[in-house]
Length: 258
Length: 197
Image (cartoon, rainbow over all chains, first blue to last red; front, side, top):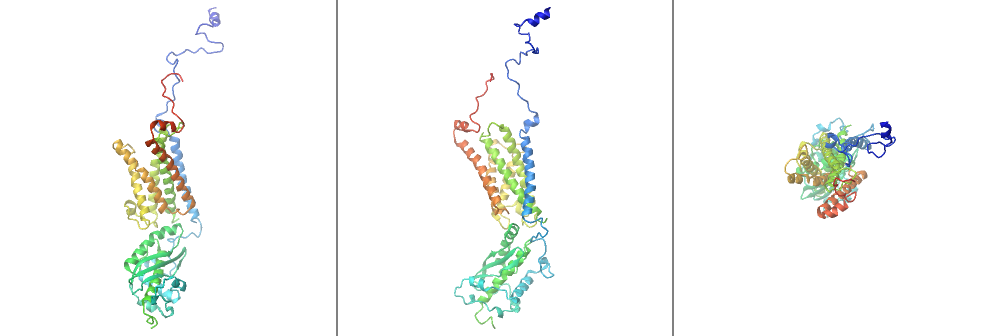
């Protein structure tokens, strides 16, 4: 009976509505907002944990992917991929690291003369003519290898700007322009040097060394720059050719033919 | 495969540059109180700290790869001492100096903050010129500097830095009321008094 009475009573606050579960009301929580989520200690220390993981993964993947893409663009995966340091230069039976620079420079200059490939007519035409009688076309046919071997590192040079031969390499030509003042080399400019990213990196390091050595020593007898074998050899060749032109220009007319 | 270290030095250098800029951007946004409402400020600070450390790690990878590349002409002396590199002397020097700056910034903040707050802040501000040096170093010495994608990337990175940098300068100069009105996400809500919402 008392159960029926309690079920039918609707005014009492403790009588549940039809279908509702009787849940006691905690007086401490009455009127307060819901408690906020409490993060675990690890998330409080590193709230950007997921972003950190993404950054790490993206960085590692980008580095590897970019390196592979760059290598592919440089042709590193091709069978015939070449680099200046991969093989020794194609000198007949001589390793570049064993060649005394002086011997090589002389032999190279002699070879140039033998093949009549000293300074071309076009290159001579580019040399400013200051009225110097030596600026005329050298008597190329009169110069022999004996003359080359007889030359020392510092011979009398005519003042002016002289352009050496364009020495061919697998990655491009090397050609230098020499400025002579008062019989001394004062400036060397590589007017042609292999480009491309790897060659630029190598030659960007090697060219200043070669230029500094040549100006300091006043000779084309240069040491090979490590890692820039081809550039060093062809640089010296072109430089020697320019110095030969300067030496010939300094000789009085008629002496070269004697 | 002889150019492996060269390729790795280029890629790690690019990634390190991007991470440096990202860390700087996060730090500038955090300091300007312009982090918006979607993420809490401590999220930005945590990300800034992490990106800074990650950038330093990739910078170390870049230096190691350059050192291992036999054709780079960069040895231990060139890495540690400015103005000793032959070829691109200023470019390499800027990289060396920026490396020292970043090392100072990282190790005065991690694992714990060193020095007074003012000293720490002055050292931390070295990250800004260091970032400029890194960009200039990449422009001068980068092997990809002639490629369009590299140039576009540098332009984008400069733009990404300029916006929060200008915002930070604005915060320093403008009065506080104007700043709060212009913060990302609109005006801040009044502090809760504990009553019903």
